[in-house]
Structures are given as C-alpha cells and as structure tokens.
Length: 136
Length: 146
Image 1 (spheres, rainbow over the protein chains, first blue to last red):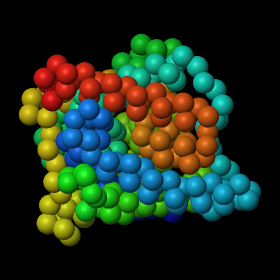
Image 2 (cartoon, each protein chain N blue to C red):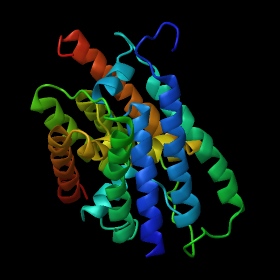
Image 3 (cartoon, each protein chain N blue to C red):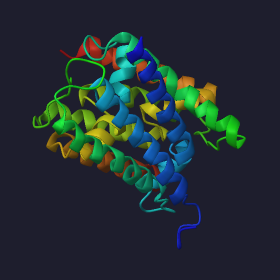
Image 4 (cartoon, rainbow over the protein chains, first blue to last red):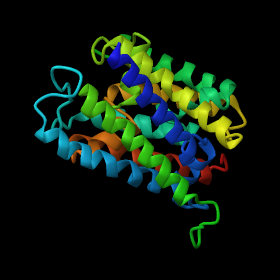
C-alpha cells in the first residue's frame, strides 16, 4: 500500500515535469532532433535538469544497505553491451524521431491530447507485444 | 529567452527536468527501482514477465497523466502539436514499443537513470537512440516529410 502510494506520487511528479518541460510536445521533441533545421535545445535542459537529482541519488544509494521501504535494491546490470541493446536502441530512436514521442510523454499526453496519444500508445503496446511473442 | 533560439524554453526545460530527476530519485531511494517508463508500462499492461510489482508499475503509470493533467489545469493548458497524419504515430509507436523492449529501456531508464549512474550500457544505448533520432528526423526533413 505504502509502495503503491509512493509510486503514484513519483509518477505524478514525473508527469508534471514532462508537461512543464516541453517534452510532452511531439513537435518540440522533433525540433530537438532536427539538427539541420531550426534546432531547439530545450530537451538538453530537460536532460541536464533530470541528471542533477539523480546523480545525487546514486551517490546516496551507494551508502544505503537497502531502499527506504523494501528489503533490497532491484537494479539492472550496467556492463552488458550486445547486439540486442544496440538494435533495440536504434529502432527506438527511429520511432522517437518519427512520432516525436517516447513512452513517458506519450502516456502523460493522455491527459492533454487523448486521441493522438492513445493512438501512439496502442501502437507502442502492439510493438511490445510483438517483442514478447516473437523474440526469445 | 535563449539568444539565437527563439523557440527554446530553457527555464521550463530545467524545472521540468529537475522534477523528472526528483521522481526518479524517489523511485530509486524509496522503492529501490529504476524509473524506466517503458519497462513499467510493459509491466503494468502484463507485457513483461518480470520487473516491479504490478501495483507499483500501475500506480506509477497512472500518475503520469494525472501529473500532466494537474499542470494543464494549473497553467491553463499545455501546448502540444502532434503529427497531422495518424501514420507517424502508428509507425513511431510500433517502433518505440518494440525497440524499447529489445533494448531494455528508453529515455527515462537508459537516459535519465542510466546516464546519471554512468552505466556503460545505458551511455551506449542513449548514444544509439539519440543518433537514430537525429538521423531519422534528418531523413524526414530531407525527404520533405517534416
């Protein structure tokens, strides 16, 4: 219960941050990726801003034996670089450029522009389902 | 606001980014997890076999539109411009869904959480998806599709 409430609060702060930052706007995201057009650096500020609390959080995390509400950290490995990672990231980046959306902003946009956001999310879930059933 | 870039919103970008980082920090220090939206979305919808507890994933994912709604109400609307045709949304969505699962993360997991951890895996993935994004938008522009 406590964990669920914390996750809801974290999601709420994340979604609010996306809406404030301009990252929920597909046109702005495409403008950031448009190096040869009218380049808009706003997303670099979003990334930079997000790095600050997280860089501090990782320093704190290294001194903690366990997280505040559960018995252990459940974190992914950091070293394995393989073809799956490279191809997956390249495909994701292509889709990000085509639609101007990545998963977080797309889901947050359900509250701002429900019809196009839902269309993107339906396709995104279909893509995830294709991965689940086709890649082993 | 930013000399040379009339459309940029550096302060809003920075403020929103700080909130995103704060959210990820809460997920890490309180729940011991990465705030990776693609993984949590897959977990919330039953498309990932392992990961966060379902209730945690669902709560975080529900929080995203609630937070955006709150901002939209408080500031009187958030500006978004979507592609005019459904095709970029459908094709883009399909590629984002498949690619983030194959590559184990997106802008939040690899970008925000992994890069700030100096994870070589995430630094590599972020370089890959950024490069693919730049090239894709460059090609769309060259082809007159943007």
